[in-house]
Every structure is written in structure tokens, then in C-alpha cells.
Image 1 (cartoon, rainbow, N blue to C red):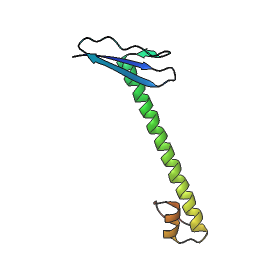
Image 2: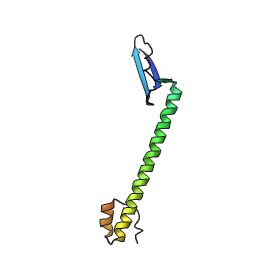
Image 3: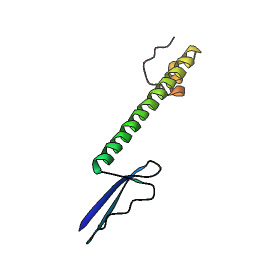
Image 4: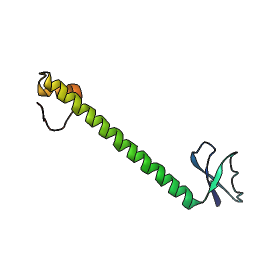
Length: 98
């Protein structure tokens, strides 16, 4: 069975691929407005998307942890016991309270 793969970037910027297989294979048609990519270009673009997604995930996680620590410290400064402040804020780092 033969197989043909078409890699492309859709008009909206989405990376995609199409696979056609069968006894005789014609190359899949490119959607309207799409830009064809080589397999290497597709792989590089996909790796870039994954790297950006991972960087964003790390940024969001760091912001969440910072907010939890700020909330925890504010609760502790207002006299809330440590265990309650941790439960309310979700903070799990070192105490470092006032």
C-alpha cells in the first residue's frame, strides 16, 4: 500500500498534515489559502510551537506560585495560623512569614 503525506500551514496559521493511502495514491489536495511545507519545515515549526507552549506553561506556573506565596504571606501577616494560610492560599513553599 502506498502513502503520500502533505504538510502545510493553513490560512489561519495552524500547522497540519494530510495522509493519503491506498493501492494508487494521488497527493492530497492543499486546502484553500494554505501554504505547503516540507517535512523538515513542518517539524521545525511544530517544535517551535511546542517550545512556545512549554515556555508559556512555565510562565503561568511561576505566576501562580508567586500569587500563592503573596496570598500566604498576607494571610500570615494578618495573624492566620500557618496551616490555615497554606490551605487557603495553596502555598507549599517555605514559611518565610513575618
